[in-house]
Length: 122
Image 1 (cartoon, rainbow, N blue to C red):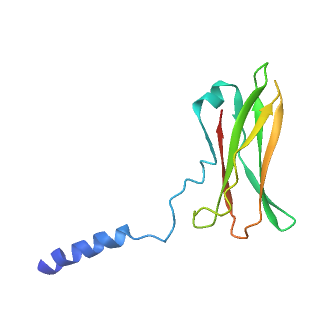
Image 2 (cartoon, rainbow, N blue to C red):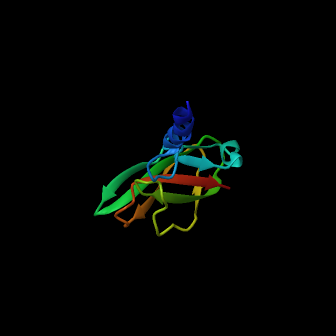
């Protein structure tokens, strides 16, 4: 019985071990403040491709309103372990015309870049 009591903490600690990664929800690829959606902007899911040896992320922003909407965006790049990849891009501003789709993009030359998230705000 003492053996089982001594073994219990070891078993519990083994269940807590994991690979050295940051827990990122890979399904959450777009982060936006609520006023963006209220303004009529509907973002697509970012996709990552390779262009001339660099990673390129693109996503479509759809404006469903009868007026133009100006918003800001930042692409955040991550490596396979979920860590930030440098350099972190500056925020950009774009005006999406009324009832139009626009594609925004980001290029990253860091070879460790693996996935991306886009943050949208007004």
